[in-house]
Structure formats: C-alpha cells, structure tokens
Length: 310
Image (tube, rainbow, N blue to C red; front, side, top):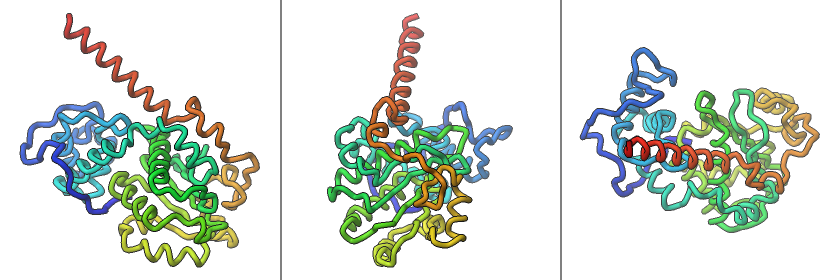
C-alpha cells in the first residue's frame, strides 16, 4: 500500500526547511559504518530529514516514529522529503481522529463485526516470515460502513503487531472469493475507503495480495476500483485459481501447504479460525503489544523522574 496522494492536514510536524540537526537514535539509518536497513543514499537523507521533522512529536501508541516507520513514508513518496513529511503528518492526524491506537479496546464491536471469520489474521506466517491476513467476502455478516472500517484497521494493526523489528515489515493478503456475490460484496463506499486507508496510512505494508478463485462477477467491481489503485500496488496483486496446478503452486510458493486450508489448495485439517479464541484479549498480540508499550513508557517516565529528583 503506498503512493497515493496525501491530503492536507493541520501542521503537526517540524517543517523541513528548519534543517535542525536530528538527534541520535538506536537504529540510525544514516551512519556510514552501519546500514542495517539497506538504504540508498537518498533514502538515508530523507529519513534524516523526517527524523528532524518528528523530533518533538510524540509517537502514537502503536506506531513508533522510528526509522522503520520513516523509511516506509520516504519510499512511498520516492524520497521526496517534503511529500513524505506531508504524508506522515496526514497519517498522524488520521490516527488521532480515527482512534487507531485504541481500536483494540473496542472488543464487543470487533467481535460482532468479525465473528464469522470474514477477515482475520492467520495463525501462521508466509515463507518469508510475513503475517497473513485472510479475507472471505462470502462470510460478510453486516453492511455497516463504520464498523467495517474499524475492524479493518484492527486487523491491520493486529498483523503489524506480529512483525519483529529485525524481520519483514510487510504483510500478505489471501482473499478467498468462493461464494462471492453482490449480496455479500461490501458497498463501493466501503471498498474505496478501505483502499484509501491502506494506501495513505499503511504505506509500503503490502507484500502480496492473492485473489483466489475470483468469479467473473468480481471483475466489474475490480474494474471500478482500478482507477484508485496505485500502479505499484497493482503489481503486487495476483489472481489465481485452485482449479489449476499453476494456481495451487503459486499459493504453495507463498505459504507452506501444511498451513493452508483446502480452500487455498493446502493440506491443513485443523480449524483456522475460532472466534472465542481470536477475540480473547489474553490471546490478542495487539493487546499484548499495547500493554508492553504502556509499561515501557511508565518505566521510562519513572526512571526520568528519579533522575530528575536526584
């Protein structure tokens, strides 16, 4: 999800024209002797400028303003520092007003919207170690725009919570179109808002999207959405069929067939989704991540207070 044009938002970040020296960080992308993120010279420069722009900005609870975040915005805007800054500012504004960092607390609403398993984070990773989100339009159980978008954001944040700092920073979508019809298809308004959020506020997160067994009926919906899909995003979307050896092999190349259900040409026999377990806060990695961030912040504040008092 990436190069969609950002919208105007209130000035939240330091303007790049100030060129104030950026503070040192633990994982610096601009150090000549170390380049753990594998950045080009222009990427390092853009990250440095974004670090300067965000020096006085508190990180959202679930989106630290570290180099891993900054490089995604830099790449999404082809290392145009001012455009990347504007995009990041727009995301920070959206997260605050949408409540993206509190979305995991809406347990009853999330459970109601997602209890059929229409969209969920799988209990396995793909062969590259990327989280996998499974979507099943045929399992649609509501037609409410707001709750659907809230559940989408929760699902994205939950998938991201599984990512390690030293691992892949992208995710995979597996969309099972068996049983798809106009009756269970999301409204065009919801589809367009979904696309906007993915491209504008989760840049450089999509690794691959596999549309499995999509019927001809879906082609009209996809054609209507194509003008809003970024060219780079389009390159990551593939249509495959489980009725052909080539389609099944493409899915097996992406995910171990022992993890895939027969619906995706796999050999898995154990259940892949259980609503009670999935929505149990004690088993939710996003809840665990949020609690860990809060605890770390409290510890840091306590240490700072003791240091100040001493």
